[in-house]
Image 1 (cartoon, rainbow, N blue to C red):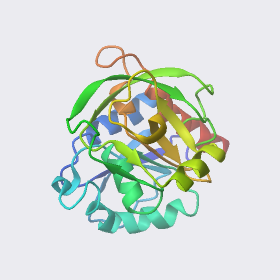
Image 2 (cartoon, one colour; image 1 turned 90 degrees about the horizontal axis):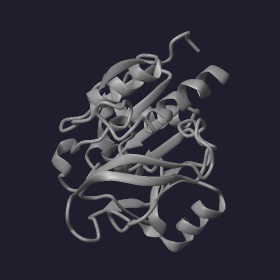
Image 3 (cartoon, rainbow, N blue to C red; image 1 turned 135 degrees about the vertical axis):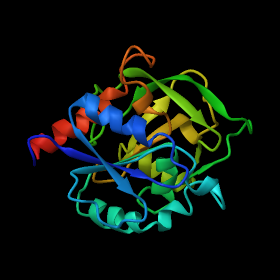
Length: 227
């Protein structure tokens, strides 16, 4: 790995948190690299972030069209080889549409957009993006979504629970109706994580509810150093 890890942040048409994710990478000590959805080349980055927003206007389904972007073909291939990938909000939706994570994100149960600071409990530190937390740690990270309701077949939910692949749950009231209060999950290898709340909006005291979100980004940098 390079002395300073290069973390790619993909911009799709309709992405709106890509620059926030780049800033989070920079504050964590990494080097953000802007990646364009139409370019299949990841330009040698050490990890990838799929940011929040409304890729392709959420037409068809949130994340459904972004899944077919040229960049995603390479992301899918490289994720299979161990490349750390974090999908935030719309990025989580893209990961599910791409088959990198199971289940789907649907309309919030109350049918309203939600935007608030949200308490979470970190359930698993066995991932590249949550290794810096303590298991069971309570954190505060903003949520802002209209289609954040995580759903999956009972067998899939049981598998996620049994294998310790739920990385975070909502504490207190569930903002969107997600099954079993799931806020984020990981793949079996632990390199791919999808999370509905926005850690990139909790990276500095001045603009966010504390800095709990920064740990997602410092975690992957530490993981890369240790690799």
